[in-house]
Length: 304
Image (cartoon, rainbow, N blue to C red):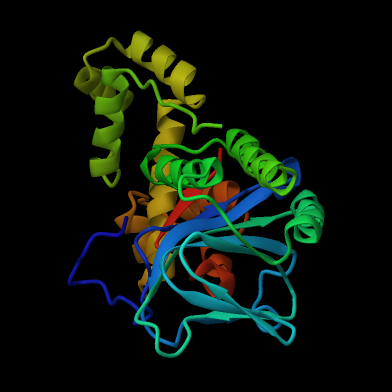
C-alpha cells in the first residue's frame, strides 16, 4: 500500500484502499483471469458505470450489496440492489449501475474477471439466474470472495494458477446457486514470515541473501531452500516482485517521473527497472501509466 509522503504529488482521484488490481505478464497461460476485486463504499451520485462507455471489453462482473442500496439498469428495466442482492454483467453491455438519488451510500463487494471461459460461464449464469438475484446472508459464495480478497491483500505473493483455481471455485459456486472452497490457508513458517516482513519494510534497500537468512535465524542454505519450497520462488526474485508492486502503485497514484519511481522502489538503474517491470507486468512503466484501465485500484499484485 502506498504510504503517505509529503514529497509526492498525489493525483486527485479518490481510490479505495480495499480494491486490488491484478497483473499478468503472460495472459495466454491463464484461461480465466482476475482483473480486480474489492470492497467499496459509494457516497455520491458521481459513482456510475455505463457498460457501453467504459473500457475493459471482454470483462465479466459480479457485484453484491453489503450495506445500503444501489440500482442497475439493463436496457429499459431498472432493478433495486438492497443488501444481499447481486448482479452479473458483461462488458460491453447495455447496463448502468449507480448510487440512486436519495440514498446515503452503497457498500458492495465486486470482482471483475476476463477471458473466454469467464464470458461463456457468465452468459449461462445470466440465463439461469437472471441479471439480479438474492444471496442468503451467510452464503458460501460471499465467504469465498471475502476470503479471496483478504488472501490477495495479505499474501506476500499471489500465484496466478492458484488464483485461477479459486476463480473456478467461484464460478462453480455460482452454478450451484443457479441449480438448487475455502481460501487457501497460508502455513508460512515463522522464519520466513520474519524475512518477508523485513522485505516489505525495507524493499528499497540493497538486501542480501546473507542478511535475510540471518534475520530469519536460518543458515543461508536452509533459508533459500525453505523459501523456494514455501513460496515457489527464489528470495531475490521475490524482492523484485515486491519492488514492482510498489512501482505500480507509484505509477498509478503519483506524477513521479519513471526514473524516480524506479529509484524509490530500490532500482539504482532506470534501464534495469524498465526491463524488470516489462518482464513481470508485460508492458513498460510508461505504457502502464498511459493505460486508463490501470487507474482504478488501491493496490496491485503481480503474478508469478
